[in-house]
Length: 176
Image (cartoon, rainbow, N blue to C red; front, side):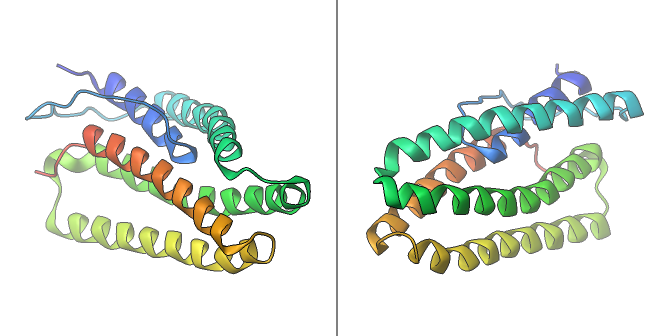
């Protein structure tokens, strides 16, 4: 049986992975236990862990992108500042997702209909914001890279995000 602290620490690791794909695997149970409320100190510790993990994983994400992109000197000079701007914009959106998941984990066991509707609407808004960020940056990357490399970048970005989504799906219990 998982304790709330263990579940929240696993969540911190997975949510940190929103900055990069990592091989985080969590076991799930058919029936998740009821979760106690976090103290302010525990919440602060968890948020600190999330930020440290996200920063460390961002470095790994950038290393993966570096390996795949095969940029020449001129391309790299324009790509990396724009990449950092893109990741900062995505981190802002992902911060909303961290908050959404944290809220959900505190109430999934006894979720009201109105709360469920609000969480679903918030999730859809976050997904739209992710698409909006990508839509804003595709033409900007296109000013620096040939279309084939723009496509390659967004393919690797999508693959890294897909790994994260799969890891999240393993961790997050279904609403009851």
